[in-house]
Length: 295
Image (tube, helix red, strand yellow):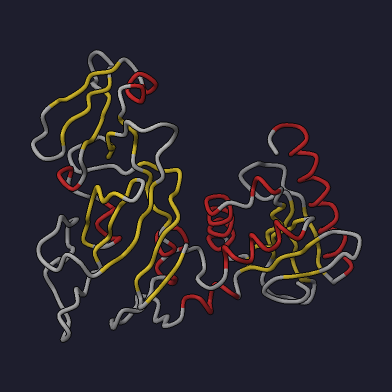
């Protein structure tokens, strides 16, 4: 719900949640900057403040929810999401629970949501793929155990280590476009600085003529020069989106424990995430949902 209608809906949700929280013993402040949530509620008897985050149906996406939750955690707050319909409430709950901020998880291997960010590659530029189909391509990121042999890896990532069963210690991270594998990396940490050869292509803007150059990942050869992003897209080259990796967005406390000691000592990041948010549904019944029945 973009524009004035969306802003009005968010203000209404914020005001309703603020009234509820004030009745429940919170001091509610309204920061005068867009760098903060529209309201912050602090318990009068002590405890973690709540960042009040109103969500319209269009806001209930993995990107928005992960970003607002990360913002709250970074400021030692809990996120209090506010919605006004059942479908949006269930969408938020499904995104934040079982498995939290993931499409799926099976046998310790995760499937991720695609995010809005691009993937910077070593040497400069961003990963892309050639797509000649109709409409927009569908990207999928998932962890798997194959291939076991050498795969592209970021600095400091041991791609060769295997456990007693011959399973890679570092899961293979596979990127698919409409079901076709286009890239394989040694784990999510390799996303921080992946080698260019891990992807079919990479693009960058030349500092002299400001044109986009698309280079083949395998050998760095220029295969396309375009005056801007739209012409590059018209030529069939599409940026590959960065997956939303919970521990990258929320911090190392939410990294899975794969037989090693976590930096935070956390063995169950999902449990910690359950305590990091709650959900208020504002409707005729003024029902409270989420991590706790009431904030």
